[in-house]
Image (cartoon, rainbow, N blue to C red; front, side):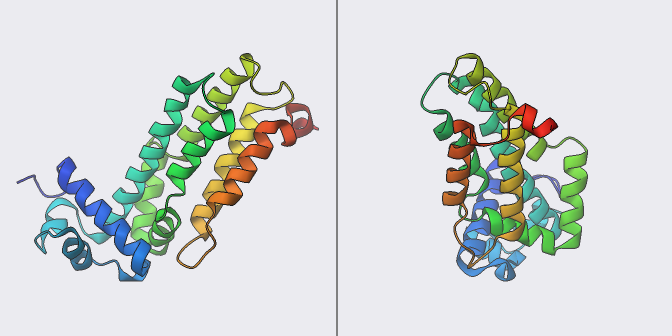
Length: 204
């Protein structure tokens, strides 16, 4: 058995996936330690064996999902020159705004201890919105060098707009809210097509 507070990858992901299903199906208010272990088909005390309580579990879940999106954003570099630029960016956005994403973020923000742990981890260098923004900027710059993104488009501004909007939707979404993905897909398409701010416009 792993030491208290250290979860083996398979148990960690099993519990995380169970929590996502609960939040997506029943809302953040239904998330309890017992609900998670019951949903996961695990022993009732397993969550507290591997995490230092429900607040720590929620924080780690959000950080894990942010890290996944950051990993996907970094993988954009390998897609340079392939597919469509908007389609490649959409894959990163969808990783952030999956079915349970807004609800999970809302859950974390509603738990002061969880929110604090997330903020401290991100401040300490855990992959999150900054890493995603940097990866998108680098990707767009590479596509621009290939002529697949107009010279009038400022990669950094587009990345900020995409990540900032996704962050807003994550923090304000939740059960019953409209699906944010269509709006994000439309925004990405507009920005990549050059209908966002250019570097000159931003400085002016």
